[in-house]
Image 1 (cartoon, rainbow, N blue to C red):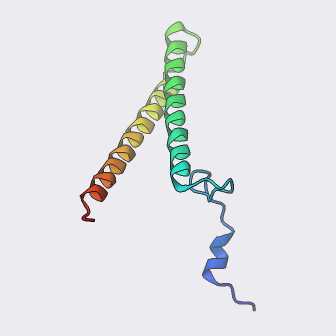
Image 2 (image 1 turned 180 degrees about the vertical axis):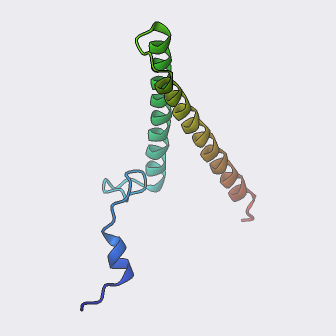
Image 3 (image 1 turned 30 degrees about the vertical axis):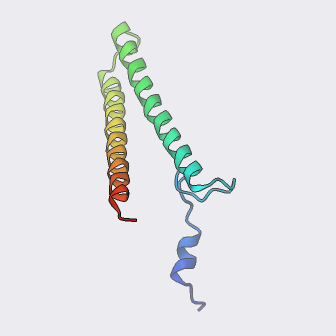
Length: 101
């Protein structure tokens, strides 16, 4: 039986787009910038979806309050997560700035 190294086994697992290595030759700061911009767009899209769902519910186009509440909660959770990630990035930046030269 051929032996499979642990690294060979996980090499074929696809990475999500946000953390997959860039094939476009982007630098680290460019990659970070694009991930940040995509995250902002995702949060904004979810908030827009929640607002649209609320407007549909209020106007009577949508009778199911559960769908509206799920959209609102999804937007709220994504925003909360984004704020926590921002807080961690700021905290990491502050720690780096405290390092002696």
